[in-house]
Amino acid sequence: MTGGLDSRIAAIREQLDEAKKLRAEAEALRDEYTTKIANAEKDAEAMLENARHEADALLEKAEEDSKALVERRKRMADEKIAAAEREAVEDVRNRAASAAAAASRGLIAEKHDASADSRLADELIAGI
Image (cartoon, helix red, strand yellow):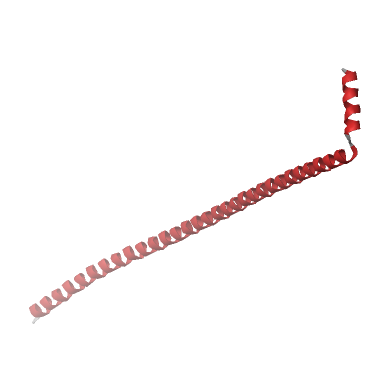
């Protein structure tokens, strides 16, 4: 009977030793996965922070680009307006010159007759 009990005790001890080994392995796996989860969370936070910085940088770049684009377009519009103003001034000058020439021709034709032409020609010849 003691032999049976001793073998039974030995079997229970083996089972307890096996259970202790399994428990130690399970705790090691739990610790390993806890570490992996913590590292994964840190990596995820780092990636999220990196993504935020990249998004902020992209947003800042887009704002700078849009400001530059608006400034270029404004400058182009100002240049077009200035060119149109120059063209309008030139057109007004040309029309004024044409009108003045036409008015002068009309006044000369009206006030200057053949005797005045003769007198002017005589004065020019005398001056030479």
